[in-house]
Length: 273
Image 1 (cartoon, rainbow, N blue to C red):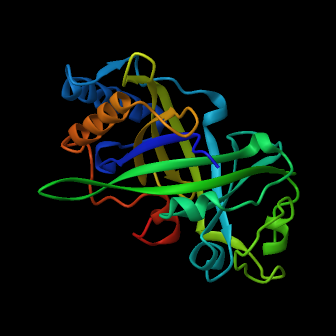
Image 2 (cartoon, rainbow, N blue to C red):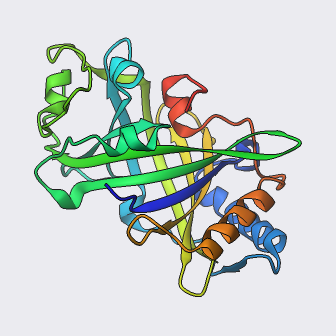
C-alpha cells in the first residue's frame, strides 16, 4: 500500500499557552510569527495560523482495556471524536501504528469503505544529541461511525465495524473497555499556515491544543505539524530536503519542547510514542 502523506510533528512548551482557546489565540499568532522569522529565506512560510474550522474543534477520548491491551499488545489505537457541542454520531478511528513501514503497510483491516482508509507517515523529533534527530512511525487508520447513544463497552463493540485483522493478536472480544486514563479531551486546531516546500508542494500547517475536560484551565498538550500529500507514495527530492531543513530549523525554536510527551504518550502514560 502506498503512503498517502507525510506529516512532521513537534511538541511545544505548554507553559507558553495559558487559558482557554481565545486566550491562547494571541500566543498562537506569536508562535507563527517566530516560525516565519526563523525559516527566513530557507523555506517560504505563507498565510496565518488563525483558522478555527468548527469541525476541527472536537471532543476526543480513547478506549482500551484496563491493561491497554489494544495499544500495548496489538499496536492499535482506538479513538473517538466529534465536533464540540454536537449530539450526532462519533467518528471512530482504529489505527495500527508501528516503526516498521512494511509491517504497517501489510495490515488489511477495513470497514468496507475504502475512502476511510489512510496509510501515513509521521516524522517526530527526538531529544537533541548535538544535532536534531528524527524518527518515523507508520500508521494504517480506518474510520467508522458510532451512534451517540451506542458508546462501545467491549473490545468486540470497538472492532465491530472492522474486518480482516489477519494475524494481529487481539484481546478477547468480550473484554471491557474504558476511557484511557479516564481522560476526555477538548481539542482545538488552528490552521491556515502553509510552507512552500517546492513549486508543486505546499505543506499544510496546524497547531493543536489539548485541554483536559475535567477542570484543567490550561492546555496539557501543544503540537505543531506540517503535512503534504504524496504522489504514488513519493515526493520530490527538493520538497523532502526543504521539509527536513524546516524541521531542523524549527527544532531550535524556544517554543519547542524536545522532551515533551506526544499526545499519544500523554493519553497512555508512556514516552514510547
